[in-house]
Image (cartoon, rainbow, N blue to C red):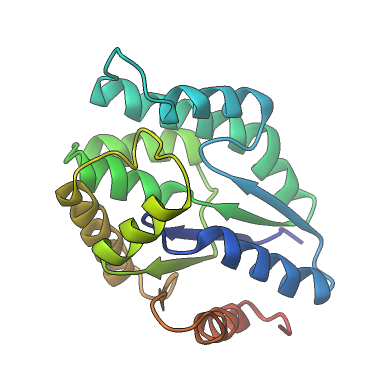
Length: 208
């Protein structure tokens, strides 16, 4: 039986790392054979591309270059890790996936959604998330958290208007695919956030 693909999405400072660990623990306690990964990255080659994408540099990265690098990393990730895991029946839990491209490049960069959709079909073929947990916060709250925790990467240095567009694009994806994308209000206390996550995961048919 083919495995399930679960993705966590959201803007900066929404608590993806904390909640990824929570989801991982829930699924492993339920006896799920689980592979945990991230995008961009997840394999040796894809992690090298991640470094190119996230590390600030004196030479600006053109928007099309950025988009193609994202999909190059994803192609490697899907072919060498995600698809083989799903085919052997394992579940895959991924920190960001295709929705992030529609949000950051499609929303934040205002790139052509048709081009993104063409690349999506070329790179992913039949691989799509079974459920996406979209952690949502007002941008000013998320960015205050992000700035408090560490040095900012190349994306985190963008203007607030960029992140407003990212959030809007994420919410539009959720509205378009409500059966796949579960919006998780990430503003309350952590236990309330994680209760929402637990309830969303129950639709996959596993006791969590």
